[in-house]
Length: 307
View 1 (cartoon, rainbow, N blue to C red):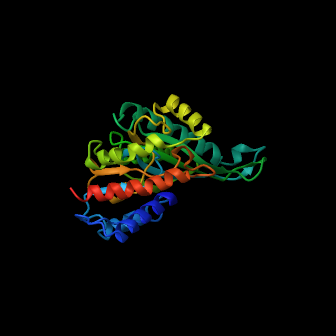
View 2 (cartoon, helix red, strand yellow; view 1 turned 120 degrees about the vertical axis):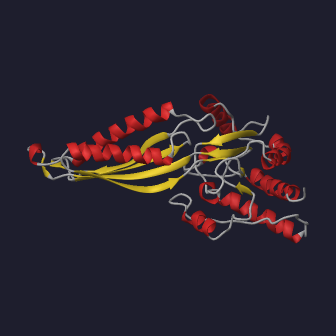
View 3 (cartoon, helix red, strand yellow; view 1 turned 90 degrees about the horizontal axis):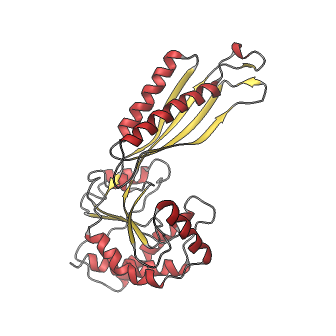
């Protein structure tokens, strides 16, 4: 994202220095906390940063493809309170880890069943992953506490509220029939966004970026990664053939910035970087691609605000 922000800033400075006339307002919106609870974009929306805007471009790393729809997200922290005891006498204690594992299995079964029954033609289905699990202090002690953190990626047909209601209902039922106590805390709750794949913004991105995409030189490793992505998800982010217009499984600040128009907005995610390296070590954008995107942004902004 740092590469995308820098490319946006430099493109806007260049347009300003060249005194390029723009028929409208081009606004740079910088947020904080996108990876946690999106407090930055939430506050900016509350302050009116988007109230007179009809278009949103986010420079998350996509490479030479663009995204017009993103899943929402609900993150949960689920904690289990049990009772410590020596492992040789488990009936004297309440195993918090076992309770947590049992309730997570019930939640997973319920969420995945409803997700399979309520899929979206663009975004696919709601997903469920357990990404953090903590518990226990030593091998011969019944654990009194345990914690898990869950990530769900949401589609409109199985909404944020539906997922939250299902999880809370299962936990309430579990607490009524088991010793110990399960508690829930919602860490993030943002809705899905589905823009317009036929918008002028998308069409302009394709028009101005295609010549650069055709000249892009990829490393042998990137080409191999592209073949693997083609086999797994049906597209190659390192292709020189065309700029794919796709939906994305990840969320963006658009969930807060576009909360007044979550469907049909002039919205695109398009930024320099290797999309396969997100949340991995050595995230990067190639030098060639980064300089290309500065030029693309300049052409895109000039054209978009002069028609």
